Image (cartoon, rainbow, N blue to C red; front, side):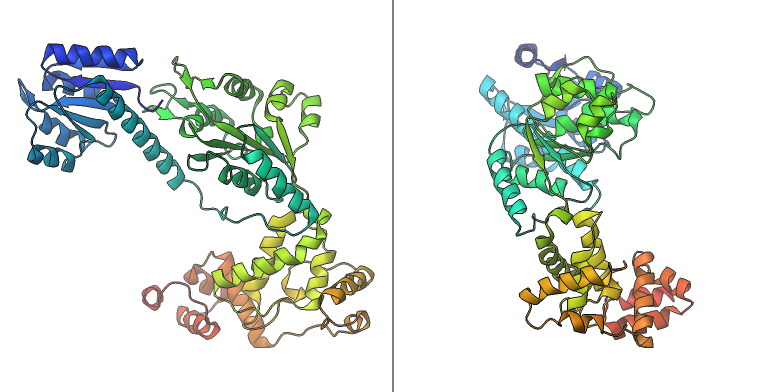
Length: 479
């Protein structure tokens, strides 16, 4: 429940007490005052979610308080109440930051509508604030693959998505468990509601309970304000518990309660908060083995494992490797502004014979690196992949497979006799510059310093390669 504490500033005793009674019935914490001075005192001592303010008061104007509240770093929503309404007054109040404008006398239904709008607005603001501080990740890509395993996975996702069931997605690192989770969310009835991700492995153990369930002001050192947890942010939507196996036993017991009762309490609080969320959890571990080692609660496992989904590793769907590689080549060629003319046959053979312990994520990273280092208008070659291909025997078998797909591919005997590639010096230079830029995360000054060249030389070389990073004016400023 985003709204908890409400302050009413109204000098009419009957209206104030009536509004207090309505809000108390809805289980809000409510305080009513009749003067600006009393309201400012309460606002200085505590944090409020919503303030009802009358315009005309014994010691001033409510609009003055409205303007004052807009300058606070943490400000409540303000609903203006007046018995002397006018279009000019309403426009002025809304321009000064009022959330709503009520004309007295108002009904209980009007208050209900205002409260619902305020709760939805507050949750939207908090979810957007959370999402704007998330790390930028390339998570918007669809599940790629033409193998029977991937078709079966997509069919299972479609069946599971339309339900409200808790889902446990299991698979090795890099297989795309988060993409599966997002696909379930996008095809579910909750697709227009929040999708909140919690990376359980990335949050320190002493903070994870606060991240999950939130905390009250003063709950611990540094808790200067009330904070909603991820479950509250996901209210009405879906929460992704990524790498759930990394959660401590203490937090596991509290997670179990949320899954069973759909309610929680913030750290340092005693208010029971109801939440309506769909839970999707992922793990790269065998949870049954973790249960045997007493590292994971069996009852929590049963609650999570309502619908299990196993994402197959890339080595078990080799027919997807080349399709994925071609998609990644197109994607990263656009991203980095490099023109790549496909993947040559020996490179295809190397891709198919590699074991891919890092699965799709490893393949994606290998292809991105190869695209960056590829000469303009050339094909990707084995030398650009960054790993040593397996022996010639397996390579020959793979080329036979490629031969059936591409009639222009060289025969196995030709592959064995292909000479080792000797790159021209200008290509070696280009590779060194692009690798330096990659290692320096696009910072041209640092890359030039590491290479022992001037910024002007770096600019000229980037123009020669057709690579655009920043603007010329920025480079001249670096000189």
